[in-house]
Image (cartoon, rainbow, N blue to C red):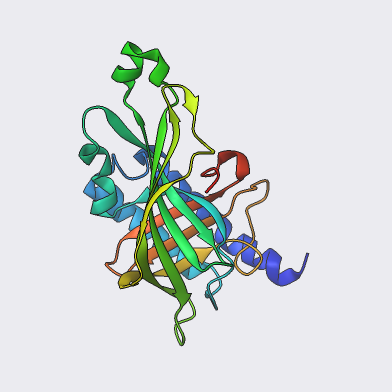
Length: 227
């Protein structure tokens, strides 16, 4: 292993661990109080300064799951879901080849519903907001987004797998701007190395509105399923 890689790993190990410790009890940010969010923001700042400068947005293709955010529109999803379903997982499916990011929100029945109707257990519905993305010229760590449309993918209903069912989708001919985000920290071949013994890369981004999202890359068995 090159000395530069070893030094990079040492530099980020402590601030990375401190950040993950800070977000661990916060339920993806849903249970965070203002003081918690302030502490997480400070930990992100320390990590971003300790890591080598992000020279470019690396290959971010694959499935990612949200582990923390302070964005109000995301934190309001569970309450907006209503009394029957809850927001179980949030994340992204990114295709470098197609230049798309699908923002995935997965819903499942609330616990009280599955306790009354056992055949609802495991039911899942995914809502995906489809965007195109491009790395911004002259700003190597910034990604610009344009919205393409929405897809709905029922994964399971009443205990029956619907993985092979075609999605319901509304994709328009126009692609208006949909904001941007800056990659503050991203592990992998083109960024800081993974922590020893860790098989999943972490990514920290800041949206155009100034909110943070921390995502973890997930493998095929934990990902978002077939398109």
